[in-house]
Image 1 (tube, rainbow, N blue to C red):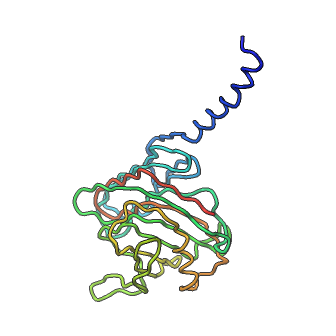
Image 2: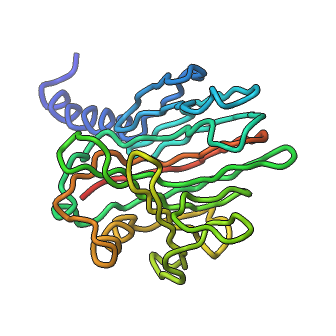
Image 3: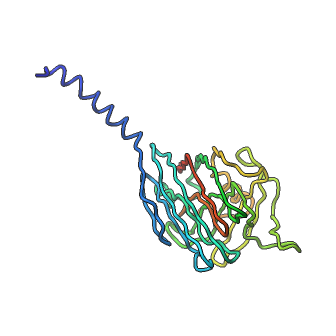
Length: 255
């Protein structure tokens, strides 16, 4: 029989082991395939979000969480779409904690994203963060801020296009978080869309703060700091082709 001293000695050890295991939780979920099917693990939700599938001739998409360790997750999505030139889906990871804060109350949004993409044939799509703001907490979208880490034969929404039909940036050569970006702006018919496109080629390993992309718009494009950040996501917009996006590590938080 254990002595009282031995029991008291073991209690903190067991507690420590329990906490250690909690920090290293691994979570694998079943694949999701439905148009608006989602699954939640930790502080994130995975949204399949086949919002434009009606514009496809054929196609499908499957998404799955593959692991969770603390606030870092891994996930994968495989998609194939044919027909039309519009976006068919935006499989993404949505942050569920810390949102609905006024922009003026946010000091930073640290994030890291390690990813790779394999494809078959010509692919049209992008890999991007997608942020939305509103004039009230949980309200209708006013502004959308996209940060494109990669552009695969796609193009951002713009208010100006050249003679070849290509979007024209409103500002070029913006330096943020160690990379150079061109900024595009236009309306999608519902809200204003600001899209930062990197000029450095695909950024498959990003580690930095994404809040400066918002604060730059506050300082230079008249975005109101009293607006609320209502949505913070990262994912892949898919238009046509076949591809698998594999994220080995993704994290995002709001301070």
